[in-house]
Image (cartoon, helix red, strand yellow):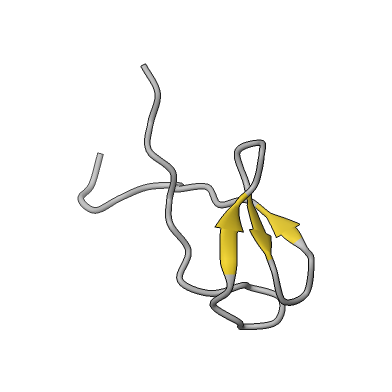
Length: 47
């Protein structure tokens, strides 16, 4: 079972919105040429 990717709205390094999915599980910023990934730690409610 795979989970969907968390979708970023901007690059955390330069702030530009020109980002694309990379070949692996991360994202690539076309403006600053950096690659990053996102991780959802927890959503809502208490355990």
